[in-house]
Image (cartoon, rainbow, N blue to C red; front, side):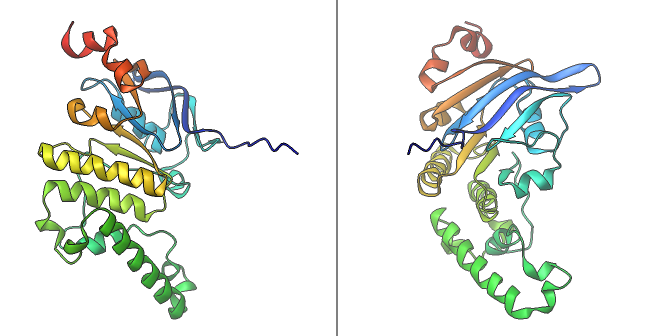
Length: 259
């Protein structure tokens, strides 16, 4: 018997997604499809609508029209916490750690479904102690993957810019997400650390089979790590393709260098 899989190869799709502020369309009829296990880049000049697009995908904004599909399910307009619970998580350009707490604690706070947080569950000490032990072990595994295991007890206030970016990724991994949207993960870090961050992203993708959609401006560093690139300008999707296809596209050249 032939079994036909109903699981789409696209983990994330937007269908003619539009978001307006007043009478201005920050995102206008944008359709993208991100395949599972991709490292996909979302690029374009400042103000072109990239952040508005991911905010609308992840539940920060409600779209004016269009749809968002995640793992084949219509999640259009769902609140942020519901999108998070379904395994689609985003990070921010500027890391927002819990200051005066350790690196480890910053990961543990992102763990989902702690039984000790429920009205009844907090009375069952053995359950939430077991959960805490499991999540601590999981967090140490993630820190090791990110090469931060030696910094587990360091106050996050003393972590450098590259480390803070990795902690943001670590917190997303603690949520058991299947797809992570990163907003400029290498902004403000030196090239050596930037390559380290992208190398870690590749390792996470290969090891945990997590899909990434990444906003990034430093294309000289990011493009070699990407499977696919989406290009926006003035709220619209201009083109998409492999890094080499996008780099050779005349419309993209005009947007970036006026060629």
